[in-house]
Image 1 (cartoon, one colour):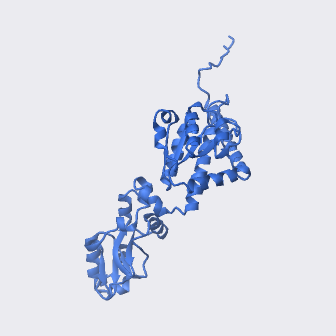
Image 2 (image 1 turned 180 degrees about the vertical axis):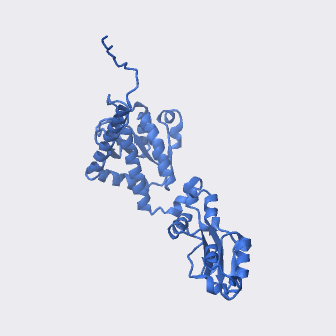
Image 3 (image 1 turned 180 degrees about the horizontal axis):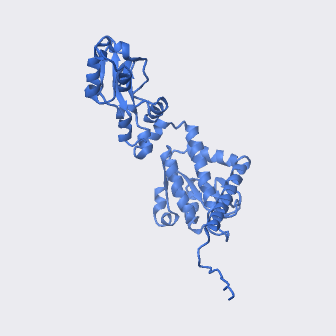
Length: 336
């Protein structure tokens, strides 16, 4: 009996190997687009980017980002990136702009318009409005001779690139390149302004990023919750203090209330022997313990705790302990 020939149905899903090959081709096309963008920045595009950064930095108003379709989705993300890194920015939909939202844009603002072809019809009124009222216009396009490219005060002309779509139609590589140039603009501006981690925290109070950028003073234990014992006292007193405060350690202070040492529950176990409770804390403590300041970022403290393989640190002003921060405190506020 002859075996039946099996003809593949076009609607059947591809084999796993085919799907992986497709995904890899997509990444290769998109990577080539980013590589072309990098090469262009080392050439003439770099000068245009510099002008664009200076235009945004010197503006008295806000950055207005606009685009249609996939360019619009990218524009929303670019506006969010600028806003989160210290540049007041928001997205204006080009169609809504034509129906009243142009009134949101002032002569002090800068407009950043995205259109791969440069001929997006919905951007026409926004372009005309910008030119009429002398509003600085920055274009992100792949066509220098397009309506948008010619109207712009600064044109960021991106290199041509093939879309990852097998039909070379769906915006994929082009959308990624637009997003990348937006990120490049935002980060270049951020660095030129000296935007710091502390500035970032002000704009990112929520989530893990917000937790990592909190200050130690926001999470430390203070007052009676800080386990302390005077130098010269017996270990019995230190053990009681350590157990009562539940931090797993006790700080040893001198007569001036300055931190001179620390005793951890690990130290107690290592020194466990008859008569330990009658020993002086000075004989057991570790001198010059790691410590932090109240104005340090939580991210810095978590790095120290992890690298030193410890679970708690005392917070000092001058040399006096004013608080203690435990790994559990950091986990509670979302630092992992």
